[in-house]
Image 1 (cartoon, rainbow, N blue to C red):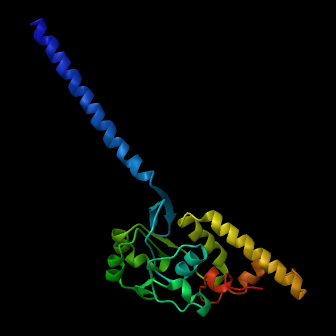
Image 2: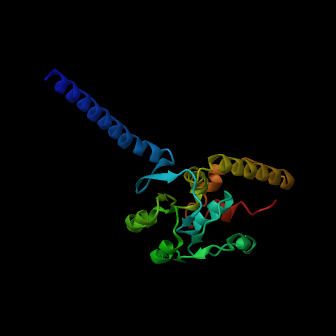
Length: 212
């Protein structure tokens, strides 16, 4: 009887040990998955953005142009009237439809691993999120181009690059003012607010290509 109880205790210990191992493995899986992406809060919710992505799709010209300015070339985007001196940067970028009307079948065919766009695309967020992690950001007018550019920099994991590009832009602007003898009494903030009634334009469209 004692011998039988001893075997039973050994069996019970083995079962408990196996249960703990399975439990630990199941609990570690979400942590492992999250380590490959970074949660980002945005207009449509929270998305875990891949830390390493290779197939970006942009849903509008603002996210397209800012991604280009950050050194990230999308695999697909809506058709956009970029300045001619930027057209060479679009070689190989697939057309997924007109601005405001992206073709979701075309997006699916590209097999993206990240999708970004303006908050005006919230009506298709449920669908795009099934295709790939999707992040939507706000951009109401061109006076917000700095904020939009830096937001996209954070989304794409290029915050440092975005800051460097902004610093370079500010330096070029100061050099231009010096050459032209322009007083710096008008702040960038005032200059930005004067454009608030214009349609949204990206940092890349307004400033990056300009050489003073």
